[in-house]
Image 1: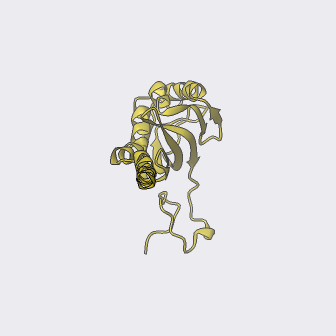
Image 2 (image 1 turned 135 degrees about the horizontal axis):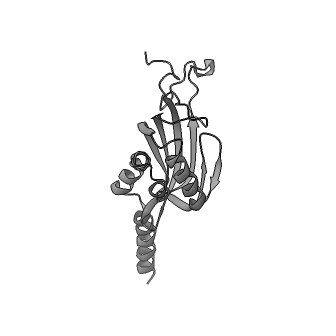
Image 3 (image 1 turned 45 degrees about the horizontal axis):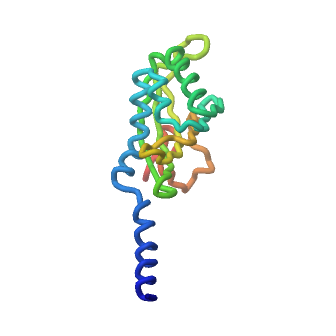
Length: 177
């Protein structure tokens, strides 16, 4: 009886963790989040953009507006993408990702935006930034549970001397030597 119990427990210890391991499909889905974000943005469709967000998403915009919940995220982005940003394009540049758990990952991606306008309707210069997304697999779909979007400040800070950044924003990091 004891050898059977040990065999059963051993199987339990091995099978349960394997059932939660991320798959290549999960890795691909997470890696494609920046593209999906940019595709919805290109359509200027705040409703489609909101479908990527969890119901209780926390998202901070480049203007430091803190949005909580898919409903407010959607309302804000419908207004934004039909208003001052209706002619804008956002292009993903570089992406890194890391799984925190098999069902949770963090994605950092740099971007370039062009065609957006200031509040006074004047055209902005193209700019760069970085977005951080924490995504969780919920009901078989990868949804953003936390997002932070940040505008880049052009120039190379002296504190970056001798440090290689995983994603360099154009104009903010030393050229590779």
